[in-house]
Length: 331
Image 1 (cartoon, one colour):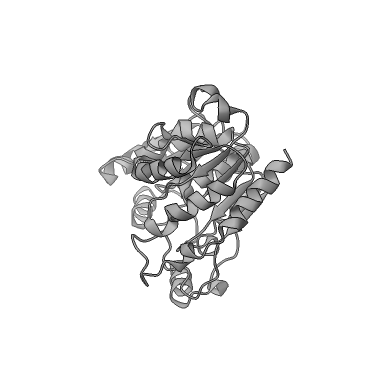
Image 2 (cartoon, helix red, strand yellow):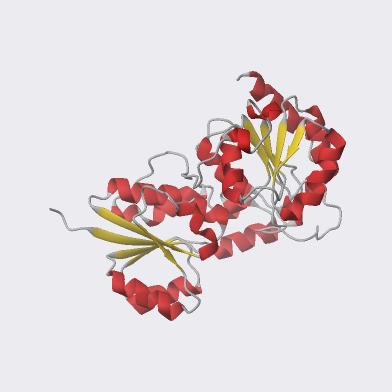
């Protein structure tokens, strides 16, 4: 029998970046004979790989890096796939001496793209394809399938949304970590007013107040789950939706695992800079505004640096609602 090949894949954060590592893990497991695949991440992101059938073992980054290095040495890995490429992963690779395959982060090119507001500096490939380039020397190729996400709980949609919504609804993900990724509440209300479907709002505690304003303005067509259900339940609600609207945030990217029609709305960040446009789904629609000040950051800011917030204030709400109404009519 061929010797087992033990491979450690590393990506510490964040939610969106880690969800895009799942095709790499799947391809490694399926394409390398007798492969044993391990993954190392931070504890707050372990849920992304819970129940993943392509992963043999999940490791959690410990508070002291030396303890993580000790654990890695004890596993006797054949190689490391470094998809994070930062100081800690560099120390891990040097300290363990294990052969490594490393994702090229291209920080300088991203800095140039931000400074000159031009995508010409950026590798046009999706982040998944750039991750997969790191494992090409192992003989691994892209299987051209979507990302993976395996829901942890055993839920019923009727327990999470009312009967008036359960049969068919639009999932609207209104949360995002940073202000410049979020559409103003007034514009969300306009979109919701023009959508024919019942709508389920999704987000955390940080957008509860926004959700209450939307709920009050729209009425019974809205069902508000913000701050009321956990992330795994939110993913389940997304998986059962007819279609999805969301911003540049982790739950929006996770929705791609279920191949739902997606309208993604972009403000201060751009999918070109991050390489995270919707991946391998049949129907998607990117909504943004072409401005000389975009992108203003890689990850989002707490306020518009020019104070006009035109990247979101000038979004055409009708484009979003028209897309959702049209795609819903095909069901």
